[in-house]
Length: 444
Image 1: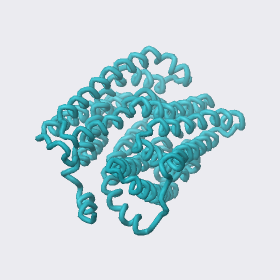
Image 2: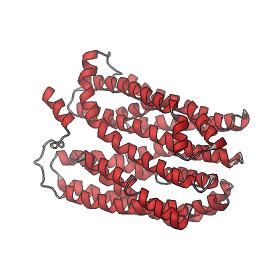
Image 3: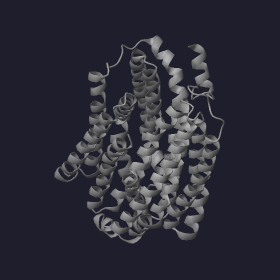
Image 4: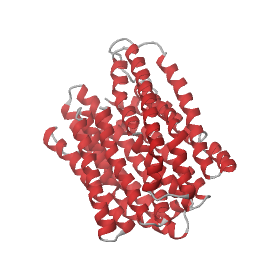
């Protein structure tokens, strides 16, 4: 599951990386900076989609595990409908306020206009992204990680093919990059739904009674999951705003680093999702030793992976700078990330695995608290201090230091959860449930 997940994520992240590369080749720092500002807002909208997709996958997986295939079909239908409705409303709110959101991040003048133009094309396609994410989550609930991977790969290939054609061939510049991204979302949505329709019974006929019935359990999982996901773009938005104080070249450097991070550490993002079912299944079976073993194995993997990737980034740092024609502060920020800051990503991985443990060991709001703490208390004061002392590099250093502290705090809290009294074999893994989930069970 980690392999399939990481390959799928790398396809998307690689295209984002190529997007930034092509934009940088146009030779205008305003364009690269505009993509950096836009990326912070797109990250926010994507995180909203991830929270609902998590809920869709969890609901379907539980019904399938109980042998109720028809119930899973009905829930898939409800989550797709709600996902499209919620994402359309959310996209409309964001679209109407694009100018204000870009200004809050610190963009001004031509850069702000370019960022708004880029976002105005992509943001309305959020419902397509939501369909693709929910479709992928439903496929993974069926154990079909391979087809979920294919959906993201095909979307990434579509984007990669269209980028040079639209950006350079037709001379559309930033508009071309935005249109390529929309086309990729169409492909991801279609290729994730097709196998559900053909191999897993499709979707059920929508009925108002079922929609009302499924809303409560959807919100019970989606609310904490979405709150957890939104913490990261909120923190990144503050970092972008802080970096804007040092000019467009600094924002462009941060934007390049922002593309390098997920591409370099895609396996860690995938691992945090793949290890969750292992925690949950063994917790439900009362096998705490296996839960602890999985937790320790995940941290060992992260440590080894970060060492290897950090070494590769350090060796390739000169080539990366040359690839993006970076100089000045842009080059300094790339060198900083490809050196010590890449090593510190181990602590972010520690936080990811701890959050997976919290979500599957009956403490979902622990992950919400940890993520928001990391991106508020663990970001704002450290970024302010780092920027005041070291300038633009200090912004990235401060962000990394906050990650170290909250990674250690999450690890300590996870150890406490893992030491809680064992459950009897077969005990329900969600005994300490949110109020919404309690209502759901009472209704049933």
